[in-house]
Each structure stands twice: as C-alpha cells, then as structure tokens.
Length: 263
Image (tube, rainbow, N blue to C red; front, side, top):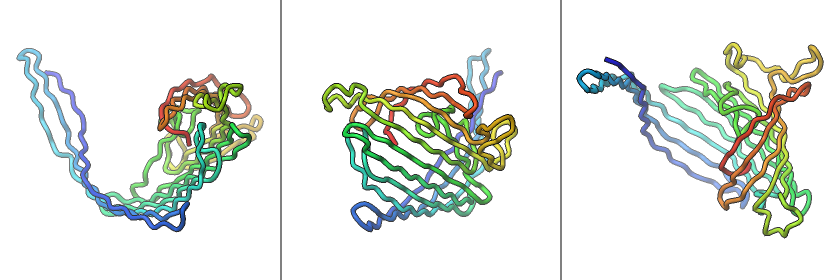
C-alpha cells in the first residue's frame, strides 16, 4: 500500500467591529473576537491490488485565542484615472492576542501622493511592522504588492520595512485624457526583514548596508523597474519588470503580472 497525507486546519470564530469618526477624513477602529482552531492529520492508505482507498483521521489538537485590535485611519486622497493623485492615506494599527496564541503586532502604512502635472503622479508608500511575544507573527514580504525585487514570501521575519516610490503617467500622453486607462510607471522599491535566525535566509539583526568592498546594500534589498497598467475599473491589470540591485551591480530582471489595486 501507498500512503499520502496532509494536515487540515479548521478555523471558526467571530469578530465585532466599531468605528468612531473624528472627521470626514479620519476615524478610530476597534475590534474584538475569538478564534477556535482544530488540526487533524488526514492519511489516505491506497491499496492498488484491491483498488481501495482507506482514509484515517487523527486529531492533532485544538487551540483557542482571543484578539483585540485598534487602528487609526486617515484618508483625504483624490482619485483619477491613474488611481490616487493627491493627498495622504495612512493606517496605524495594533493587535493583541491571548490564551493559546500570544503576540502583539504593530503595523504602520503611510502613503503620500503628489500631482506633479495634470496627468502624472508621484506615489510614495512606507510600510513597516513588528510582532512580539511568545508566538510572534512571521511576515512574508515579496512580490508585486510589496517588494518587486523578490518572489512571494522570499523575505521573512518578525519585523519588516518596505518603501516604494513610483512615477505614474499616461502610456500615450499625446492622446486625450479619456485614454489614461492605459498608463505606465517607473519605480524604486526597498525592503528588509529581520527578527529570526535562519541561516542563509534571515538574520536576527538588521544591517542595511556595508562598506566592505565598497558601499553596497546588505540586509536592505532594493529594485528598480518599469511597468504598464490597464485600468479595469475596480482593479488594475499590471505587467512589470524589476531589476534587483545592491547599488554596486544590477541583477537579472524579474517579470511579473498582477491583478489588484495600486497602493
């Protein structure tokens, strides 16, 4: 017989939210809830001689944890065909869990948009976070939505920081503004993660750059790139090319498609 198996985790829970607006542009968000997790080991015994499959299930245990959170949100952005083109958007939040899972996590997300010309925008974002306590969360950074110089989850750690700068402009500026649903961008991304000691992957400490052998980035990662976007209304279809760099040299390009919203 041949056996194959997997672990099945089932999450059940509830959350309650309330909002306290301070003004048209800012508010306080509060949340509380509880989550119940059960884990089972599922093993399928396959008997090719008899043509039978027998499934065995064994319980690996349960976990229960409560969570509370608070966030301050500010948003006075103004939208156009290229997405937000003026204003500030930010979110600063803290989350705390208790019982079987204990961690405290802080995440800050600050975005600023500058309308350089009538049909072009400089968009900036600073995103950072940290998780602490016995069961600190592990962040996974990389891919088209955070740091385009790495694959999904390539950067991991209990603390992280990313920074993005984009110049967005019409793909065909000689056409009327109604054609701005086709746009392009040049960008620079920076990212770093730390807080875990995994040899060859991530370190407990964070050293952004080094001067040994000439100035270059060390634990801080960077990438430059270009991209084209198609505005589908609620979503953007994007094709982007990014070149990772440590300042001294530029690596081979990474190509990526994504569907989502611009930061």
